[in-house]
Image (cartoon, rainbow, N blue to C red; front, side, top):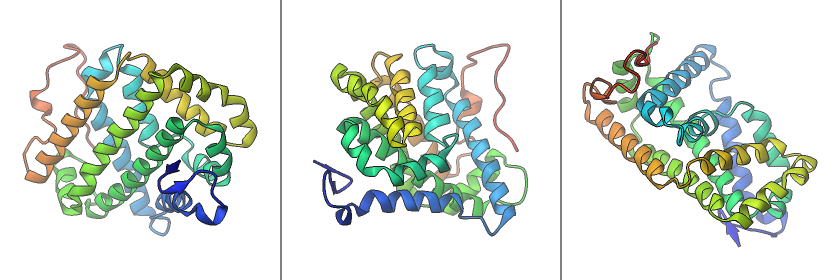
Length: 257
């Protein structure tokens, strides 16, 4: 069986792809280590984008069926809480993970790492194009277009759907889901408890949906449309002005600086 081009059970010398992916992801976290101003701007951008994502999908978040999945997507997949330690753990225990986790669970984790790496690269490109001023929709849109990389933006959105599809597949297979949970104690013993917990939180979120097809398609369609509108220079790329009021008396504000 192959995963990201790596033959499971192969000699260490043949296990280069996943390790390089993780090292690249770790390096992206320090891309602005020598420039505190850009590092601070990156943190502001990521916070702004998290708010924007929740604002764009507030109707899904308001639905009890989808709430956990929205929080998993935008809190876990986009900037996990202890990502540095998680990546370090994963680099150290690749062999143990490949042996203990079922294929679908391992693939979901690897796709999540790919998504995070790509997201960090795109964020860094956007930060370089942002002015030293509060972030607004207009300034964000200009920086988004200046950064370019339209194909990678589309791939970022598609990866989100792929991670979700793998998690949904695990949820639909009780035997595989049980194997993931049986791996809990060995995972902690082997040193990748954070990764196991990440995967289990994803499964809990997807179990609550009882089918993720509509959810994943809705997010994919909305984000592809928003990206196209950003590149086209539309004045309201996220269509905040056209959104129905999910909570008439407490409508969240559009993200600002």
